[in-house]
Length: 194
Image (tube, rainbow, N blue to C red; front, side):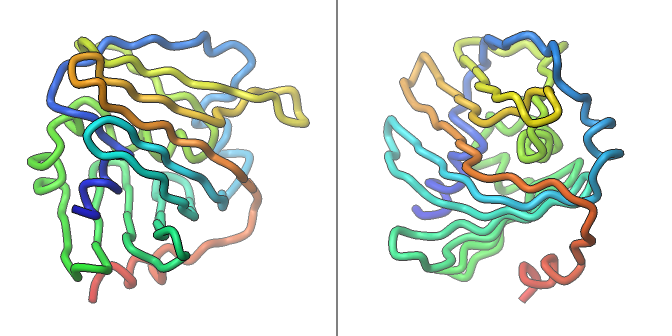
C-alpha cells in the first residue's frame, strides 16, 4: 500500500490525459541547465488526493540525467527510495523490503506509459517537461514557476489531475540547490541493491 502512495507521485491512473501547459518563455532548456550546473539537491512534498490521500516529504539528489529520491513517513523514517534515469524508474519499499522494477511500476500504474522518466528529472532541475506529440485525455497537467536570481523561471510545483477518477497529486519542490559539486550516484545506487 505504501508503494502505491509513493508511486502515485508519478502517476494518476490508466486514462489518457489532456494537458494544460503554460508557455516556456524565459525558461532555460534542459540542456542549458545541465551545462550550467553539475548537480542538484533539494527537498519537496507530494500531496495526493482521491482514492489515496496523503502527504510525503522527500529529498533528492540529481546529476545530469539521473535522480535519486528518498521519501519519509510522517515521523521522518525513510520508507521508499526511488531511482529515476532517462529510460526507467526503480523503487525499493524499505518497509516491506520489496523491489519494484520499471515493468512492475508500469503494470501497477499504467499512466507511466505517458510520463517519461526523464520528465521527472527535468522537474527536479526546475525545467518544465514538454508533452508534445502525446495523446493524453482527461488528465490536466499544470506547472507553477518562479523567477530565479538570474531572471529565468524554474518549475516549483507540478499538478497532475485525472478528471475521470478525480485523483491527482501535487509535487512541490520546497528547496533546490543547483551547483557544480560532484555527487557519487554509484554510491546512492548501491542503496537500492541490497
